[in-house]
Image 1 (tube, rainbow, N blue to C red):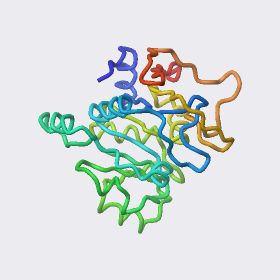
Image 2: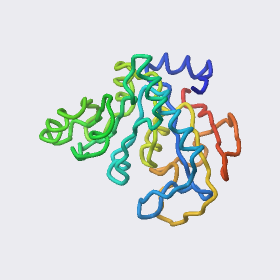
Image 3: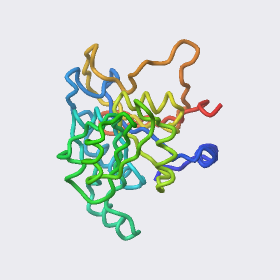
Length: 242
């Protein structure tokens, strides 16, 4: 499990929210999928195994509804050994799986509901259709936060109260922006692969509205290292508690 710095530990304890990190793979030109929102294999086995270790050592894994609709991920731990180790410690095989879904659009047939044991949580806004919420409540715990869109700071507080102290965010670009611009991210891990994807409309690591001049979000480099034919960068997000 990556070490949590003393400052970050202090901050998320005071803020009553999980220690949160984004993990993503992107192309050499910063894209995380094609302009058609289709996944491209960017990293190899070693990086996939690193990601699996991060999942296995997290209390929860979170994605946005856009990622679910585009990729239908299961967000499960793949390693049998890691699943056994979690069970031996009294945990479910998989961490809690969380979907940020303001309008409760997720399908009841999504892989996240069909594959692997463990708790599922769908975070919706109060504007989500009541019938959708009722149906989803049979598949997952429902957290209502915000009026028309999910109030992420409040949602993080509610997840913290459920025992989520370490949260892994697996994107996509819209959720990454929302979390970063809300000051809710402590670290970012990006694997930069040896491919070019291109495309003006292809999503990057962080999309959304974007920061403006003189208010960009600074990072501090924790480490950089070669993995297979790419580079893994680890960043600390700074200045978002001021």
